[in-house]
Length: 373
Image (tube, rainbow, N blue to C red; front, side, top):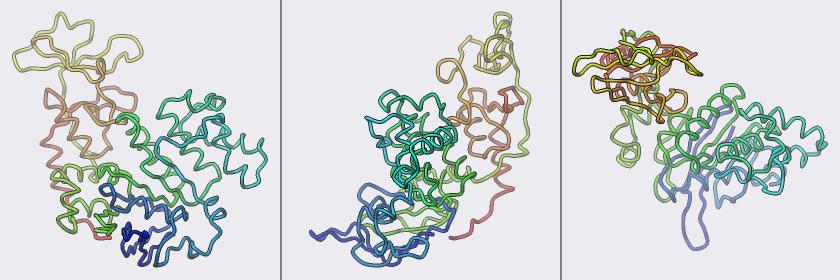
């Protein structure tokens, strides 16, 4: 558990970076600190491992005042992930991951063996262990950064805008990886971001900071979206917060409608009336039997990524897997030229179509006022 009690950070020139912060991160919780640049969110996080010392107030980790704990000992028990991974370029991936266990006294051989297991846990091929950071993609480097933070199995992780330097598709993949890992490991995580979508997607609780390092609101993400504490929070969350809030509603049980389909090899024989669309099913190859494009009477094919519809697991788009959120279902319906979102099974096979009207009907049934805190 991490507890801030009236914590302030004031610099010698009079600048107040964090102003009278009182906040608690319960054990096993992912708390997202979000806000504009210069609002104190990163400073607040860095006070947890004493990279920055508080000016006043009390900050405790598991009941111990951090200012009374040796900083080296404190940091060895806290994983830390930063933007662009911060890997040591002269060391191979396996040794980057093994860094903290070795510092804690574990043999290098044992630490390297454990590092290979952690690499697999974060979704990396152990074959990459012998490469240097410069030989990896940006997304792979960030996964190594997460693996390094997890290697010593710390109870606490601090993550400072770890995914802001990668492209949107990789960012979605890394976010999904954090959600998966957290569901398995239940670490206490403080995750700093300037992206409200990322904050509400990942956070069990969201702390919105304002200028001058003042905490504006701290609550469950659904409550922040539906009940912003003030105009500052409302403005930061954005005018489309209702759409964002759909991710907290379950799409299980949505009716699936028939979709007209055509095999890829039969496109030349297809007859469509003006305004009609058909879903093209791949004929052969890796995606055989799976939908991959829409076609209309003019023969115009609408693709994602040039050749295939986006998979919901890597960024929403036109594919939807029943059991996901109403946000993904509505996104599928709205992004489809036919008005029918493409619902697929776990193997990518077509199940049917999702309509926006059905999403709104499901929302009406599930809607309730989220609890504060």
